[in-house]
Length: 355
Ligand SMILES: Nc1ncnc2c1ncn2[C@@H]1O[C@H](COP(=O)(O)OP(=O)(O)OP(=O)(O)O)[C@@H](O)[C@H]1O
Ligand SMILES: [Mg+2]
Image 1 (tube, rainbow, N blue to C red):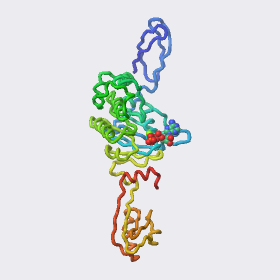
Image 2 (cartoon, rainbow, N blue to C red):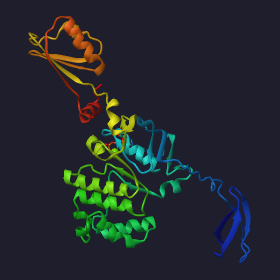
Image 3 (cartoon, rainbow, N blue to C red):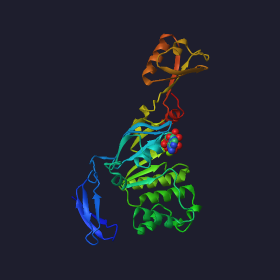
Image 4 (tube, rainbow, N blue to C red):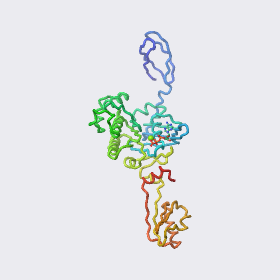
């Protein structure tokens, strides 16, 4: 049974009514005798909350803008209390995914739960404990940070007494009375983070929080993200810079051209980025000529020769076979060096569309 207070449209008398979800009841105003119908929303008790250990669950999200499939059947989960990196090159679909999660754009297909609440069925509940830092955040240029955050407090229905402590907390106390229009990009970003902290969210969704910042500001923002996480919040942040993600995250999802290509811990990323070692084999009398057996060798992806050095890119499993074949073909091997590309190198190759 739901109890609700409604207002008589004629005499403005407040009337308390009771009913079940989906009920349509006849109401008579006890003051002016006006009669009317009231319908209790059918879904009012459909608040579903799963009690699992995920703050964010995305299942088969697809978003199509006219002729662009920005997000293509993407699924991943963010665990409670982790710092989760959402990594991908420009145009990969990061912002679109984040906007869909927050209900800012409609998805074509998919199911998303935040804090266990379905974002469509229980949109209000799903959004109450999220702090969101958009990719581009606009402030009124002639307001001070205090006035700016007062404004956000009003919008979020929060007490303004938190504003000054919040400004100190993010390290903007020296700029307390300056106009936001005079702020550097880094200072704006800190004000943006302060804005997300209003209402003490349990989940922070930060879209490229370190974009456009120099190394010093990146560190400042990174420290703030760590601070929020140490207090127990779950953080999901997007980035197109692998090192930022490596530095901060427990787990990472990589999106490229709208498709998710990995969801794993940082140390496990190398297997998704198809890191292949490069061999440098020194062979007596090679004279810059690639041996014929190498050009047709199964599993050898790239090869070249310079002087007595043969350069080969292949899987680790092919490496031994190549050496053996060269020895059997009577090439005199003098030295072998193996170079493992860094994650950064592999990620850049991926961004550039390297197969
Ligand atoms: N409102 C829109 N209308 C049409 N296409 C859009 C719209 N928003 C995004 N797109 C397209 O969807 C794709 C994904 O864009 P999105 O902004 O999600 O990428 P992103 O990963 O956030 O990139 P960036 O790192 O540059 O911020 C791009 O091809 C983009 O042009
Ligand atoms: Mg973006």
